[in-house]
Image 1 (spheres, rainbow, N blue to C red):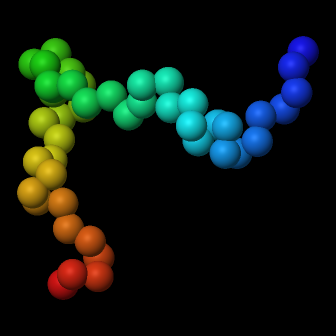
Image 2 (tube, helix red, strand yellow):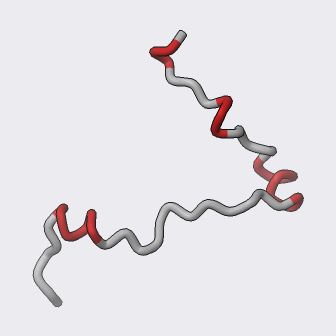
Length: 46
């Protein structure tokens, strides 16, 4: 077993995340259509 990674080492090892993929019809049936990024608003911008 190796040494424990520091938070900086974990930060630099992104493993390809986050993944952004188009939502398929099968996914939208289960999870909904989702939101477009332009509709996302912060609670502080009202």
